[in-house]
Image (cartoon, rainbow, N blue to C red):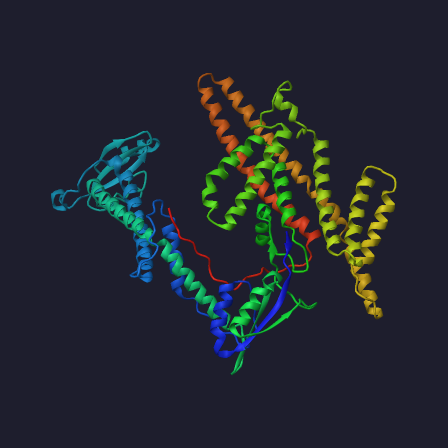
Length: 593
């Protein structure tokens, strides 16, 4: 993986050819446009595009979809979008009404089926209802109003009181229950009608899914038109000519040159200048491009920096494996990945995440086998599985040395890559000085001879070569000294970052210990309660390992990314960039079941 070399390309042509030129550039899709416009006007995105996205998301979420219509001359985009959004609104209202009706039926169930008699038949009296807990039932003897118990369950007594006016708050032990005026039989009828209407809405939604592809295509065209309108504001215009400028990968220069010849345009091709800040375009091997997705998510390196995607891909997988620390959990993760695999394969980003997921599973399974942990169970010494066990997570000394060694290697890789990137220049000696200082720290820890000398030499290299500006006046010398002294303040951070990798040991130990604990609890429950213990054993194993699995996966993702994006990035990436965004048409493919 590497950062693609770019060239600044300027196209100049007749003002009348501007629309055609921009359309061809958009079709070519290789230029990141530079803003040459003298004025800025807001391009209205409109509510239509947002409504289309909402309608598409709603239809794509439909469990059952119809076969797609590839083309239809009578297709009315706006009408389909409005129908989909109206269907969504009605669906929500119906679901809310159904939930309310079901709750009312459940609340009224203890009172039974009844109709309120006409008010005249009760001589102007009304019925008032109360749910009295058993522990307060004795207070009913003090109620002066006529009352009758109509139902009783294991918690409450259901009391009906007859009175012209609502009884006072302290007339009964509890506040009254609001049952409403609609009887249960009518609620059941309403619920049935609502369910039928919901089925009709669901059928209409499924019917609308046949237009997903055409909605996608219309949405893509609308987005292309919006981008084209925005691009027209990025050009420099006069009465007779226009100029459009952008960054183009070196490999695509010939394509732009042919376009200029076809359109009769003047072309100026320039290299990246020392003061330029071009965007960053990563050239990724798809097998390890999952690391690039992490880089895009967190921080794009500067154009003059280097691409850390491959290092992050493998180091993240290794850190995740050390935290998960169980081959059985790795198989569970594999099952989840296979379950979501069809959905991930629908996009390029999804494919990259899927590949990264398989790498995480592979590393986690291999580390789990080396640690000899299978859902917290360790194979007996005489079994063939025990021969592959090379690590003992309960050996604190061994695991702490492993974690610190991995952290040291990770930071050395970061500094070594920076040194290689600056090869041939004095600036490469500063990261080499940090490498020497880190190794000297290990030598001092183990009491090896020469550690102090190596530490001194390394820090001298950091002090002298961190700031390599030429010295033309005394102020430049002061700035270089200040830069060197400031760099030396990272000494404590360097060793703190190395120790930060101890989280790999601590979290891995916590995951393994919890797995063993749940196994022991399940075994104790089975032994303590004959018969019922089998059920308790299964329940503890399922719930316990599910909880531990979720915690381990979350910890592996969070802390695995943290070590890469905080500690590693600090030492390996100094410049922040912005992504290369090609002026291109939206890619669309026919959607199908």
